[in-house]
Figure 1 (cartoon, helix red, strand yellow):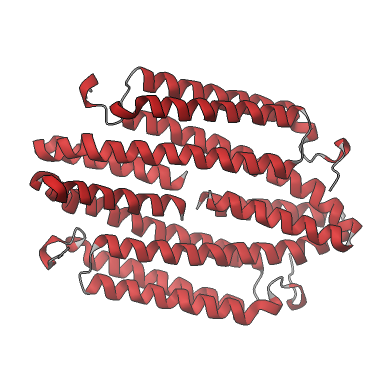
Figure 2 (cartoon, helix red, strand yellow):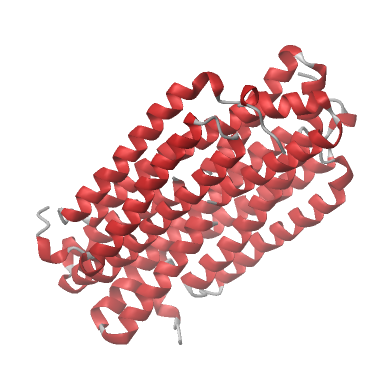
Length: 99
Length: 99
Length: 99
Length: 99
């Protein structure tokens, strides 16, 4: 399936996603420092939970953008493409819920 | 509560945790590249799910190490310290399950 | 918002959902029996996990039906109704991911 | 492994767990009614999320009781039994986090 540039659901929020992902990258580096400095397991776990929540929030944002743009467009176009997009979105939601 | 170096539950697996966290940091950078290159939302979501799973697996490892060392030691010492450690571990588990 | 009968996304799978929910109800009764009989905590927890998974699978099914029918129909109708349905679906997904 | 009656971690909270599980059973029946009455998918999903949260809260309670009693007792007894209990608890936590 070809996906050309104009259809990215997150297009107008690109800068925001990049900022959030850079912060998440920083959290991953912070965790390495904590382990290197032998910090307390529970304090590390607290940071891992914060990072997981930040990542989950990125997922939910991307999924919302995807439904609002790609899925809505496909639904309007109709036919097999519409069904395929819904299936793909449902699979992504299932992976998200189970991860 | 003072936590001296010798009691870190993850001590003998430090190198392994650092390796896993570096890989997770790399995943965060990979996600930024995907967003910059306008890659497809669902493909980005798939990578976010993989990264979340990797992070969750680090959590579960740290928690197991914590139970095996810190909690077991505290249980043997007994008293208020034992109760406090169990409470702290239960709270960490709850944050993990809810994140 | 009025929701008339014809638009239920899960309409053709009603019997299947009822069967799964009756099984889940049976699992809740089974758990009570386990507690009454003082069964081992870990065995009870295993059953709770199985029940949670069954419930999660019902959620994912309902969500897929909802996207395939209600959301697709709203997207085709367009306008404010379409936006409202996407928002509502995203909120439901967020509750699901966070629960 | 024999588990005799006196060692159930949830012993003194049995009545509370039974009450919560009966309420969860009621929620499962309520969901069947909602499906039978063709209620709106999103409203059903909201109820499923509430039920999942209630179930998760039972899990976290049971796990805390288990750590406080069975795991602490095993840690004090020491040896292979202690290791086996920690392993078993960690596995239960992993199932909980992943479900």
